[in-house]
Length: 163
Image 1 (cartoon, rainbow, N blue to C red):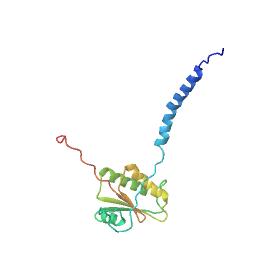
Image 2: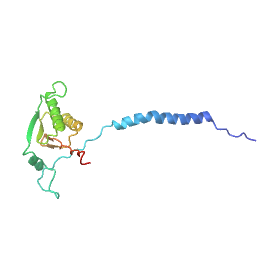
Image 3: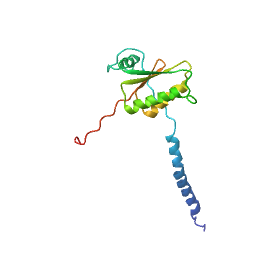
Image 4: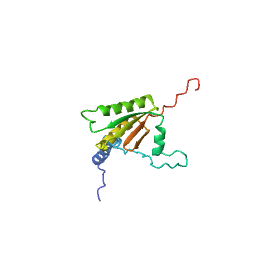
């Protein structure tokens, strides 16, 4: 007569405990890794043609230049003397102007950042970092220059009497 099989409880407890341990402690590191992954930046470039679209408004170079006609334009030339590390005066000025336009919702002014021949991809991404950090949604890259518009003011909150 063969012996009946007895379940091996210590091994079963170890498997369940190991699974719970891995799920508990690795979940936080999984969330951290996926939350801090680099995300691509979606950037729309304006068209160069002047043809109207079906809606009447096309995101084109000429539409943006038309929108610039009645705005105050502050121009900053990023020449070879700007530096992101040791002498960041121009870069700091650009950051402060973006910050001012964002917090005051100044839609009557435009910041024009002109890239020179010594500018590189890092300079362009540095400006993009400022735009993403401050939540600027209105900007365009035209002819080696960023045109940065201020965001529109938010909708006013309803009064207590309207509620």
